[in-house]
Image (tube, rainbow, N blue to C red; front, side, top):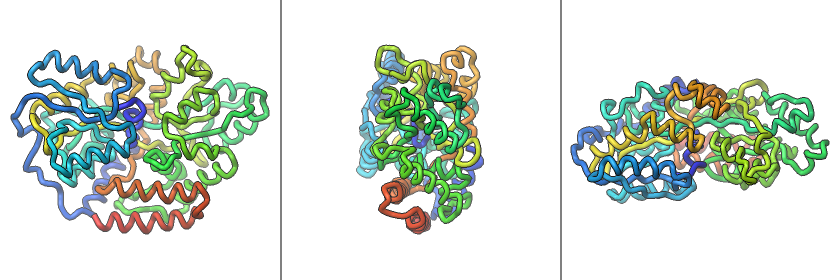
Length: 439
């Protein structure tokens, strides 16, 4: 999987445990029955070669880890099957593989929000706790792999959004790290008057009509004190807080705080704009840290930026979406005993540390965030950990693919002006309610 997709998952990408428990309870109430546990990864004793289906490995770190496994297990080698870069296309390919009951995939890289969907359809097997110990992992990340109280996926990467900002420009106007959207807007108004501020856009996130739009919308609603799905598992978009969240996004586009061109931005589009010096503020996943700090001429922002928590709508802090990537075992895959051992290996602390050091990807072990050597190399770790502690998962529904499509359609319509905020939220509330009730 490329660094962008790994880092964000998403969906990745708080207070987390309570929210997940509440959402899972709501989902259980809406579902007719829990998935069968007749098959499980631990019960299968078959061993041999397996495959790992996940996004493109553009960094080489994943292949390096696979090479280490393959060297030690010559009769149980893992072959990497690279899926498309787009999260939506990855999900589509994984779903198609499951619907045809193909054994082409053994271990699958799943966005954290897909666990419920894949478990509910019995496309992945339960992973017994004894197969992959999770007690030393961040509890919220472990919970993203659970459905009906059983573990169906193991966390491989976690994530929370953070705010990258041009510290040099803020210093020039005497502004500190922003705590609210108003702080950002005020700072940008001052920076625009500087010679070095000419042509620099204020803020961007991920606003193209894809999963990133769902993430940014959820964060806006959460940062206004609202939610998309309530503790009872029902949509909560008919609230003042939800309206304030979406209205804030719409107003930001209308005022020019967010450029209209940002409606075409995915993670990489915004990253390139930030590195080219064209953005003051950028909501992004932590993987951007290393790339934006490169001194090979690829980043004009190198040494000029800092990071902080996502700003709140009216008060600090804001609320990130919990992202990340989980590993699951296909119900139709072969050699599942090998698959369980491989997941244990790949999600081990040594490999998590290596992924962080090589690619700035967020580990699932809390002790790595307080490691002095890692903190020296990645000063944002404390900010990221604080974001993880308060991050909120995306709506955890079995038909998540349908839910996120509905969100993207109505939010995009509100941002473009083809629907009013009130009409978009009313339509979304109605359609999500029907979707949840149909589960």
